[in-house]
Figure 1 (cartoon, rainbow, N blue to C red):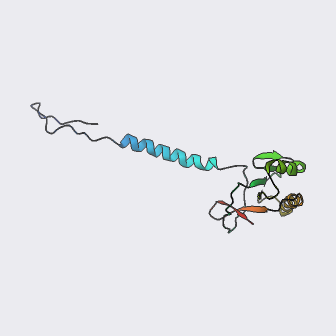
Figure 2 (cartoon, one colour):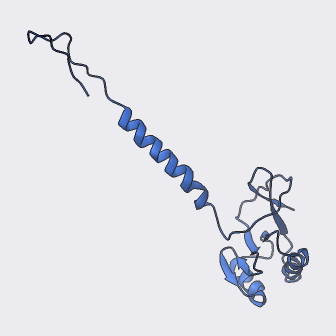
Figure 3 (cartoon, helix red, strand yellow):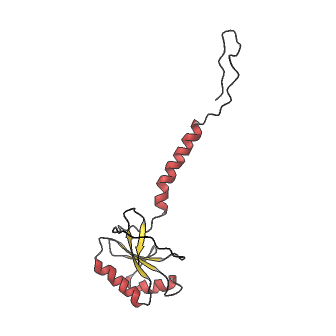
Length: 146
C-alpha cells in the first residue's frame, strides 16, 4: 500500500512509497505450508498397521516390493487389496512377474507371531524366496529386514 503524508498547505512531504506489501504473500505461503505439512503424511499411508520398532537399514531395490499385510483384526491384504487367506498365493501370482520378486510381510504388533510366521511359510512354500519382515524404525520410517 503506497501513501504519502500531506502538510497542512497541501504539499507532499515525500514522494509516494513504492514498496510492495508482502504481508498477504507471507500469510498465503504459511497457510500453504501448513496444508502441505498436514496432507503429506496422509499421502503415504496404506492399510493402518501398528508396526513394531527395529534398528535396521533400508533396502535398495529397483522394483517396489509387494506388501502382504495382516492388520490387528487378522485380515490379509496384498498391497491395499483385502484377500482371503486361501486366495493369498493366487493374488501374489497375479501381482508378481516371477518368484524372484521381493515380498514384504507387514504384521500388526498385536497379531500373534505364529500367524505372521505361518503366512511367511505359506509364501515361501509357494516358491517365493525373497520374503522379508517389515518393522518400524525408531525414526518412524518403514524399513525391512532381510
